[in-house]
Amino acid sequence: MVQVRSEPEAAPRLGLFGGTFNPIHYGHLRAAEEVCEALNLSRLWFIPAAQPPHKAPQEITPFALRLEMTRLAVGDHPVIAVSDIEGRRPGKSYSIETLKSIREQVGPTWELYFILGLDAVLEISTWRQYRELFTLCHFVVLDRPGYERTRLAEVLCREVHPQFQPLPQKAGFQHPSGYKVLVLATTLMDISATRIRRLVSEGRSIRYLLPDAVRRFIIEKNLYQ
Ligand code: ATP
Figure 1 (spheres, rainbow, N blue to C red):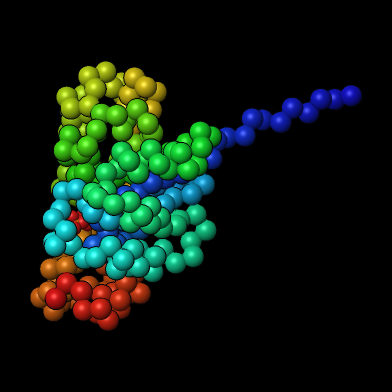
Figure 2 (spheres, protein in one colour; figure 1 turned 90 degrees about the vertical axis):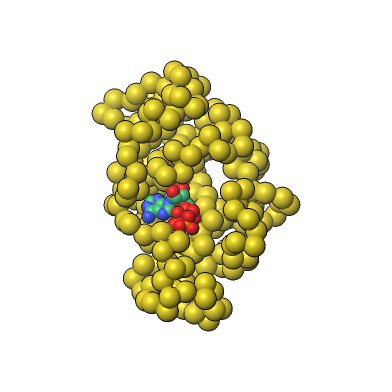
């Protein structure tokens, strides 16, 4: 009898895309879509920060409104969803805590990919327990206009671990723990939430910078006036 040996199943992959999302815009959304495709993610969660550690609470829009805008933007995407995990924890929203509790929630079989922009990773040394983060999951770094990719290696080796090894074909770097920092060339979009808030406060158009449902929500709730 012929033995048919099935290939071992690939581990499911979960992308974690944290941010303030004040508001979410097409820079975030298109990057998420392209990461899903490039890494064949089974799921991607946008994770709005309830209390971003770097921002004063009075400076930002309430969590519930940012969460709602993120949900409106995602709609019923087959892979992408929105997690309110950081709103269910008191105090500042530290990524290290989020990552550990997601690992507990999904169990050991899922591969986790923490997604962030180049601007954010270049500031990683300001994050709580940032060195440990790189020993818990893979990272995906998105290019962002105005930020030099060449600075990534320098920051990783100087601030995180001196023995990051470059991956073939300039795909990124590998931490001694085995976890990777992948650099993905997603479509560059020079869109920021700061600019969107400024345009609204100046009474100017934000159409086509973000989904129309989010634009209408901003108008309806009088945000960023
Ligand atoms: P703000 O202007 O208020 O600082 P932002 O537009 O940078 O906001 P965040 O919510 O702070 O948005 O970003 C969440 C994550 O998305 C960060 O890791 C950031 O680097 C990344 N990101 C934001 N905008 C873009 C963009 N246009 N292209 C790629 N990545 C982006």
